[in-house]
Image (cartoon, rainbow, N blue to C red):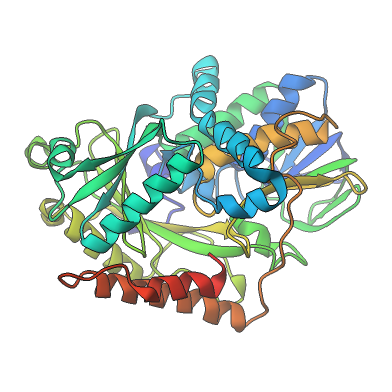
Length: 457
């Protein structure tokens, strides 16, 4: 079994991409984007669509797609996974409904761009299935469906029972599932690498192997030289904590995945899953799965969720305890897959704000913009963020720049060791809640509510 190597998705592509050249001394640009993941690349794409003559420079510490953009679970969902009420407090109900609608449009928009520019990313339109395997999970499922219906997603969401679920995919003990329509499965590294090629073709310059050491009004400092630009967009998401002065802005939560070898037809005949739905469960500790293009099965989850002092990984190698936890999830959901073993395990970080709600914004006084805090649903959210950043950078007032997540700021995370104790404590409580809810006749555990309250989830 391979560990790390950034992710399996790059192995699937034949290996890591050849690095682009580093910054060669001082430079100037109209817009400097820090971070060559989905968010930065989408922002560059829409800026060039709006104003082709812009001089745009993207600066990246490693290589384009090194972070979550090249490691995620491949869920292009367009769903709204944050707290509606928190956005409504400033944007009102209509503002949140507008944001839900805008998020829902990201799936079609990403697919449109890929088709227009020939980005082959194993995109497959499908449904999302969120499965309940006990009474407590079924109660949460129904609560979420009611909540989504109340906030403008009623036409996308419905409940199915055990029989209809088994006609799609057979999971031991499953009582039913929430179906969210209008989503897609993607190969994430193919998407980010294809997008990088497209923006380069539009005239955007990407420099790699160039760590940023400081950000201030009009200036990006790197170890290779100084970049001067009136607009600077920070698009570093889970790696934001690595930037000077930003280690408490967003917590870098760790998420990990395992993938099986290609599974034989006999396995798929037993399990079903012919629709290639993206699939998760209603456990408090949560897991997410994909059936890949060539018939592999991926399982992801938090594992060890946080490293002390907001440390981020480098090569994506998970610890053995996390791998064992993911194998346990595989055995629970798809026991027939266990004998085939695991080919690869990897991990990465995602950005989490103190209130677990994503933001995008730009300070006109300094020209400094930012986007992120996607809490694990960045494949689609980054597209909306990139479009919004482009409008903000160009000084436009548009429906996107008036959404309630724009220029929204929350307090920073606590200093260590409180941050470590809080996040680790939350996940211990969530895992304990899952064990309690697995008992016959158990309802939703109060331990989960306590864990979520602890960190403002």
